[in-house]
Amino acid sequence: MTELFFPVFGAMVVFLVAVPLLTLMARGVLVAVPSQKNSIDRHGAPWRYALTIAPTLAPVLWLVSAAIHQSEEGAPLAACAIDHLGGEFCRDVVLFGLLLFAILGVGIVRRMKSARAPRRGESPLTSPFIIDRVRSVCVGHLALSPFANRIRVVEHGRAPVCTRGLIRPVVEIEADVVAQLSDEELEAVLLHELEHAHAGDPLRLFIAQVALTVNPLGRILESEFGRYCFAREALCDRRAVQLGADPLSLARSIVAVAATRPAPAFTAALGGHGVGGIRVRVHLLLDYAARWPGPASRRAPVGLLTLAAVLLAFLPHFMGTGPLDALHRGVESTALLLGLG
Image 1 (cartoon, rainbow, N blue to C red):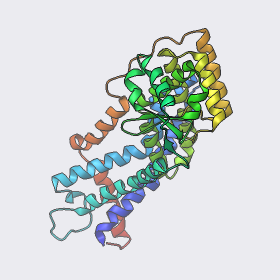
Image 2 (image 1 turned 60 degrees about the vertical axis):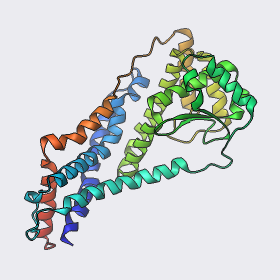
Image 3 (image 1 turned 180 degrees about the vertical axis):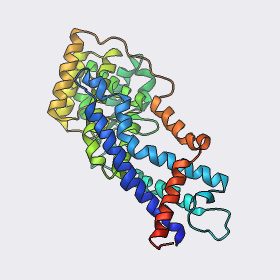
Image 4 (image 1 turned 135 degrees about the vertical axis):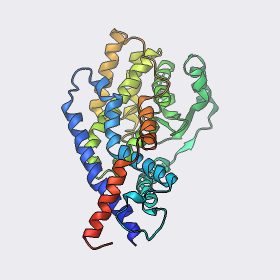
């Protein structure tokens, strides 16, 4: 039973002490940094997204990696305060890493079930006329042509227009939406969703939702996450214009899609974020019609957040596992003081 002290109480310290403290710090930074000037770019900045997910994922990622590193060495006994009766290996660390990963897995499973939950009437479209029209619009545009096989027309989807898929995103658009949009409006809509797919927004939003789900104080970051999601929609509007979409056509299509049916919260969907959000986006598009926003900046081959996550995971293997050792010994020492060892 003593082998369960550190895994259970260590995980409690992580999720009930460390994660909430980091969350409060992240919230303080997000509130303190001004965002009035160029608010769309600021709210959609990678560092704001990072502060949403880092309080949960950063400590869990580091500690799981450190636990793996210690299990590879096979000798984390120096950090143990409880006598393992001559054993050469402490299984506490392995169980601790597995428990952290299991807690994170609960959030992943919950979000996967939500993402895959069938919607009433959701089905692929078989009408060749509508499908051929979408394909013809794609073929007529240089950026959309390679993406044509990843556009699905459905009778009823999760949203009138959205981008779905964590690994290889696809665009899903309802047949009624296709029917009510002109070719220019349809092209603008697809270019907007193309940016969601290229940026991997479904995966970004999924990761953030998992982090907020398992974070005890995740609710205090939801408003910032909502601003980030709105900023991504506005930035995808701008990117679509930079790729050749007509700003007025995109504005009309946003209003038309929003009037069809509201999109679920925190999804890469064209018509979400309420009346206020639609008004701001239309206003920005009217500005783009009067003044072109300029060419888009090139993306780095490897995203900064991805690089940071990789470095964080490898850090214990190069710089040691001091914080994990301190947590391990502290929890077990407390257990001994309380007479539990």
